[in-house]
Amino acid sequence: MKLYSALIGLSLIWGLSFVFIKWLLDPVGIWGTVFFRCLAGALVLLPVLYLKRKEIKGQIPWKALLFVGIFNAGLPWGMIAWSETEIHSSTAAVMNALTPICTGLVGFMFFSIVLKRRQWLGILLGFVGILVLMDFNVFELFNESFIGIGTMIMSSISYGFASQFSKKHLQETSILLITTCSLLVASAFGFAGMVVTGSIATFEVEVMTQPGVWLSIVGLGCFGSGFAHLLFYYMVKNGSAEFATSVTYIIPITAMVWGYVLLEEPITKNLLLGLLIIFGGVYLATRKPRQQVASAAA
Image 1 (tube, rainbow, N blue to C red):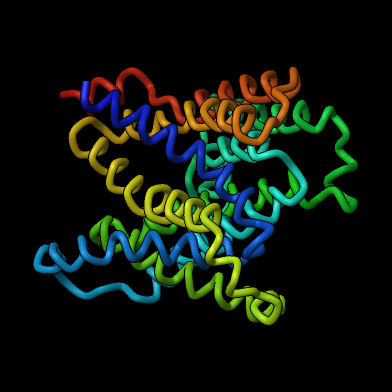
Image 2 (image 1 turned 30 degrees about the vertical axis):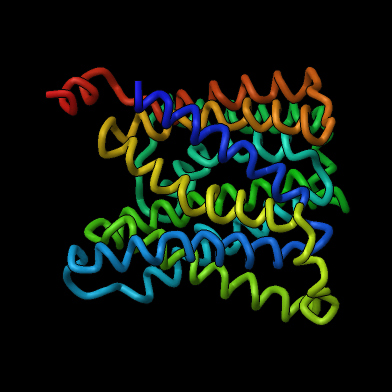
């Protein structure tokens, strides 16, 4: 019962994150959203990391952690925030469900991972889901409308690249250390983004006095990026990795509900159909053969 409560709680937190991004975009901007989100998450995890510092053994792979911090948090979260300047939070959440599919595709292209016919079918099905979301208007990806659907695809590819890289180079590194360092690196990446884009020059300190801004930072950073990761790894430890990652299927649904209730975003037929097709693709791309499941259980 505790595991299922954790699963539902995590899906509600991560689904609500897409709404918090919408609320933060106007007052702090795209890269300000990344900066405050990651900084708040890191501040939650740093005390936990300090308490468990003796459990961390061996040399710390700083270069690998820097890479993962950029590609698993800083860059994709910036792309998601950028996307939400053009598309609904619920659409962004549905697009985010492509991550397992993009992870498999990146593994094939850059990490010499062999994909089976079933996985290729899942990848194809996932991209059919994207076409449904776009109402089959492919040319949107090659004009000014690239910001939205296109940037969400980029964020999923970035997640996939970081996941494959972590599996290859950070297999023996503490998950808590990876997460905390990723958030610290991503907060620096977000701050650099504010400097490069000039948004830091126009940033108004007064916006930080707004209750909605603090609510979004706490919700997105402390809960969505900090506490949620602890909840996720609790499910991995006490349940299984497969059970924990099943949250991927629930987040778009909770995000659609949150978007409808809090932002009055419409739930369209294309959105629901695209979601179902993408879910089918994710299932095919990530489903393990029966023999492998039986071996893992044994």
